[in-house]
Image: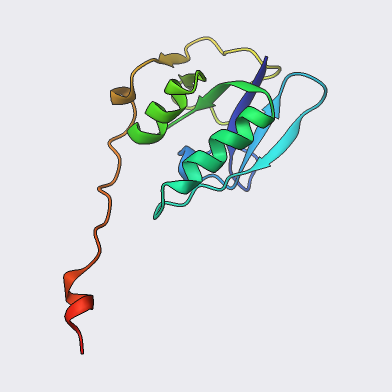
Length: 127
């Protein structure tokens, strides 16, 4: 069972999954990295990240914050998602769930997602 953590440029756990540049995957052979394809403006990044996690054999995701739509998609795909305890900055050793981690089982437990942007009517009316 492999576990993934979103990691920032300093090697600490990122505050939000969608804003992390990479994810560290532990468990199995050796630690490896996955680039995070998520982009706040499109939803295709969620699908690409989910595919990359599945291809890497990840079954568990440990996060600090995650949006509701992303959390819902990952839960429907069968990933176990946990919210890490407040103040935890360094990924825990191995592929285990640290004590104090909260299992996320419903999309509503994630942060409210940003409203999806609609095409601007004013842009179409501009000569």
